[in-house]
Image 1 (tube, rainbow, N blue to C red):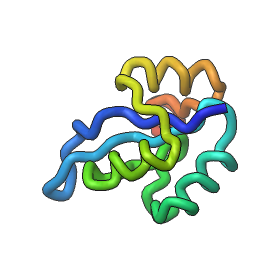
Image 2: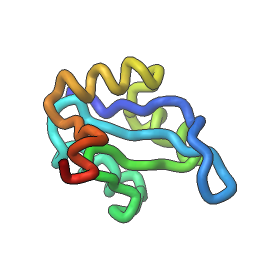
Image 3: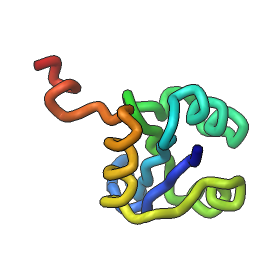
Image 4: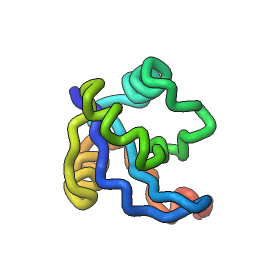
Length: 90
């Protein structure tokens, strides 16, 4: 059981963002986010979008920093991944 975070490299709203996921279940992810001040509005179906300025703090709190490809691989393996097709409702 792990909380995973990738590099902040996704631009939006004038800053860079990272993805925060769980490799086991969403309740674990929500609990970690709540304990660390990440608002629920940052949740997007299978991950939280977190700003670059929170990255170091989340790693210090126990999130495992991994590359983006590994994050996606582990999210898929967990069965929690929501595909682009599912997001579109197809």
